[in-house]
Image (cartoon, each protein chain N blue to C red):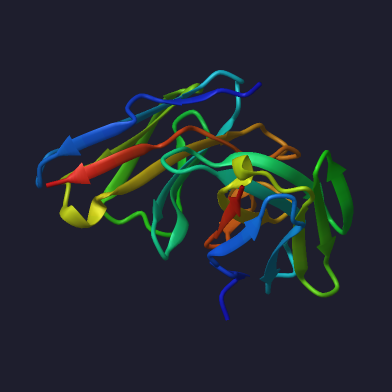
Length: 114
Length: 113
């Protein structure tokens, strides 16, 4: 079983739709969870950052972490064409050294159609 | 805002050349990372450094080395470039304590001919 599983898509939705992106993981030591957005030919840009379980909201974006199920989600409300990008989930452990290393999902390609 | 700058956006080199990729961060972060990103494989860690002159191998260090002589600069070196090192290379940084996310540069798209 891969450490982090993410459906690569592609996912195509109409403008205004609610988008749900998900990752599952197997390593119970993961404590920090991130979502990055990556436009074509650019570096990953941090969208959401959460520690342990719970929800976090920032504008149209909501991140959820369920550590008991080893499952994280990103919801995008009122999706816009400018949200079209690859979305990467990433996670890591709590202490230093090699635990700072991020483990990534392979990314989900999202297209929002006008 | 954290700024991570990679010196080249696009680079074309020949097989067998020694290639240097440079990364600079302006936030006095102790930890710096080099990843490569390939279609279908995602991001994979090559090397990271947790302080000046300190380094640790990541998941795919073969064919690469690194240098960290100053805190703000982390260099990735391809000792003898090969075509299978054609990839997107991404640098990231993180402060000591780790209670913040990694911030990435815009990447260097390297082609080895």
